[in-house]
Length: 415
Ligand SMILES: *Cc1c(COP(=O)(O)O)cnc(C)c1O
Image (cartoon, rainbow, N blue to C red):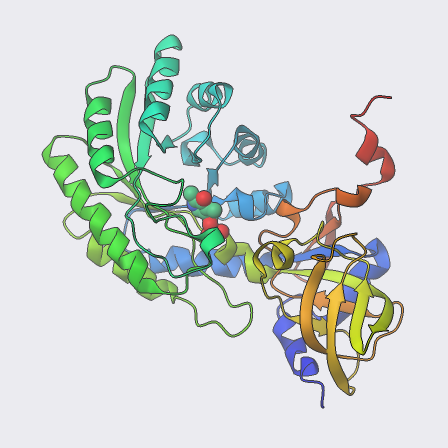
């Protein structure tokens, strides 16, 4: 069988050419995350332009990749931030993103986090339950402030994605029903300490079908009309994130069609659109680089053991997610192999049954589309230091996070 992977090499396009990747490894070893900042710019601008005709704010979802250098880069493009913890809010501020472009989402906000979010004067808090609303009201009252809020409404629509990353169905823990949302808005309107200014939905991640988003937007827009009739002044229409990307051969949603569908749904509403993309901005802009340690065969099954593992990139183990694997090697005969890491779990793999040439100690594999939910989901399992991260801009390589060493790992422990 001929190697089809070599054909994929150009798909590392932009700045992430094999030559650059090899240079990055020479300087910083493996495993390693490398991000293409110019590609991040391109993705951001595509989306920005798609919504161009309308008041809009892109709030990049930090959880996809929260490296400060990436955030600073997105801030230079005028991005806002969608945060899901006080830690992420602080990261956004540290990177220079102003508080009026920061929104705060999540089902389980702690008192201290709510307090800080109000004190910092962020744009609004996305509220996910009636109890949380009362909690925010109480805290704002104690602070003698008004909390700007938006309510996450669950449109109960199947996003047609992986169940682990689906969030917009009644059976998910996220958001509130349309009926509950109405009651919450009325409560907020009558409160001295709450100012309802937005409405929010987010139905899932890695969405590749437009129709569920369109349907959700229509439902939420219709609710918005009825809230405005109740004199509740909704200024922000927050459509969440979730735009899918191509990992393998998925057809994805065109940003123009996406924007058009949203614009159609909010016809007649004077609102600013907020969009919270994470994966779409950074996913295809990053690669994970790992080096081969050994190859082995167990009863005729081939394994390629590499120095990267599930603690570095957990998506394959967690979601059975597919990432393309490219050997930075000349075209050769290939055969099927499982690419596995050194972690003591059978679930520790980066790819299953992929075609790769015969590999030797030190050969490099690039795991593509690893810019989102890669490093940000990594851990120290098996006392493995987290990877270094590199940014490439205009062909220049820059270290944006050092590799963790043993001292870093034990710093907070006491004997
Ligand atoms: C995770 C999340 C996002 C970003 O999701 P992507 O699939 O990375 O675009 C946006 N908004 C909310 C509320 C989220 O939970």
